[in-house]
Length: 168
Image (cartoon, rainbow, N blue to C red; front, side):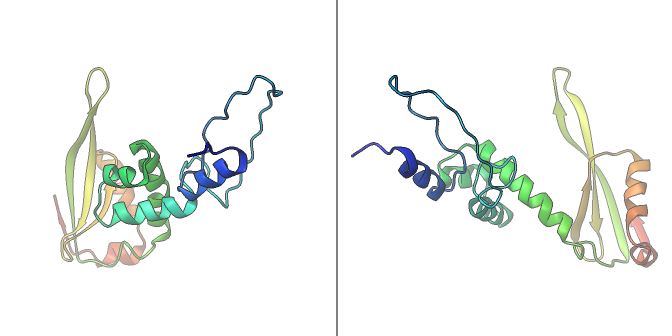
């Protein structure tokens, strides 16, 4: 089988769902030049997957598949898929204004999320749940009660007034 070169190689790379071209082949008889072209219609900033592949990966992971499974199917690294899922997933969450609906009962649960670093510093999170509707509302990246209270205060007044019961 022949070797892909030039535009055929770039076409093949984009069709595979990867927005980053492989390194060029060194040719001693050619002048060395470099170029960069950024086109956010092909891929979002800081995302190595094309927009279509990143959206597909986000949908797959959101539907229950692991990042590892999706990365294996795309033939790329776990970090590439995870970065795309986080990028597109955060945008979806920010755009979904109806995600936090009315509830009469809200619950908070602090959880040791991870231990990081040389001294295994503890990083906590607080889960905010709709107890009446049995669904997760938010995960706040702290257990500091003032920051969790600030999250509640940021909700619309209609949301806060509807809460009759709070649980810890």
